[in-house]
Length: 372
Ligand code: FAD
Ligand code: UDP
Image (cartoon, rainbow, N blue to C red):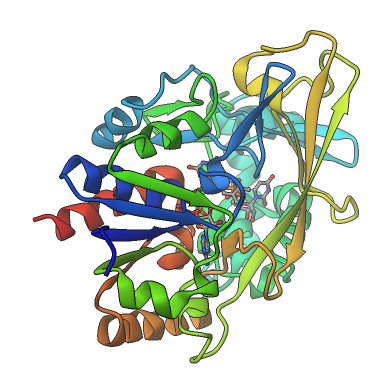
């Protein structure tokens, strides 16, 4: 047996929060991480004075005061408000769907005019219960917006027809009859000044925590399970069980990052390309997350390409359709029966499309359960 009380697999937000809370209670923790850095998908790295979001745009937002106070222990947040703009075949539209979008789309000026137009467009779904993402989008906002701002983006992102995707994916997006481009409805929102990595660094900075990067749990799974009294696992739950009940589906991404010799490339942190032909879904320009901070003659942009997932690829998104959710439940059952010294947590361990605030919440739930 080792001198540690816990082995945490994965130095992402879930694993780091658990390790921090365990160490606070005097427990000794070993953290292993297969990448060559900590922080999982929230990892940011400074280049030319710009914080680069290595795994895509990360904006922290929550309505939960407890979670907001919790994360603020580890960093000071700026006042960034996410306001992506959509580029559909060269035409620019504000997001989320609000009076600016409706005005750009239809030339309407007042909420009453916009509502009249939306209601007219919703008619084709009148009396019908939306059964998939396409029907949900049309019944929410009408065909024009669906065709220009949703269909192409969604089908690229998920690699499936919108008629085959679950409706809930689109319910994340607000629809507003005000001129308000804030992508989120949450009470609190921002980006940590100086990036996200410092948050995880501070969480793991304890004499009771040892971190090793470049180590894959599956290289010595049996030894780890035999030697550690308790394991916190934040990798893929189906891989943990050697896919014995079948494979869960994931969506992957490819990021192409480029330095440009201009001070301001696109004028916004996030621009979505919502047509079907452009192979990427969005371009992010990192310096705008911190209001242009960094080299004034240079900028860094990242194109985000959606990709199918095959074993060995990075599983960025769980695909929470009914079939996968049912299979996940079977794995969770197997975990309860066969692996009761393992806590499965986070986006991959719990197979849920969690945002950062939700990951913090479920990590603190796991902590409270473990140390009650
Ligand atoms: P992860 O960050 O994935 O951490 C898991 C860690 O475990 C990884 O570092 C992985 O390498 C490691 N690991 C896995 N298997 C093994 C193994 N076998 N051995 C050792 N280590 C292993 N959330 C927001 O709130 N706002 C946003 O704007 C936002 N934007 C996003 C954009 C993109 C493109 C993506 C992909 C996600 C976004 N998220 C956003 C979600 C956010 O990234 C997650 O909620 C959060 O990072 C999940 O933390 P986690 O610890 O569960 O998982
Ligand atoms: N979406 C869209 N057009 C956009 C942005 C988003 O149709 O310009 C849809 C798409 O289906 C996407 C979902 O809304 O998967 C959720 O978008 P969000 O930006 O929340 O996704 P994430 O940041 O998690 O990739």
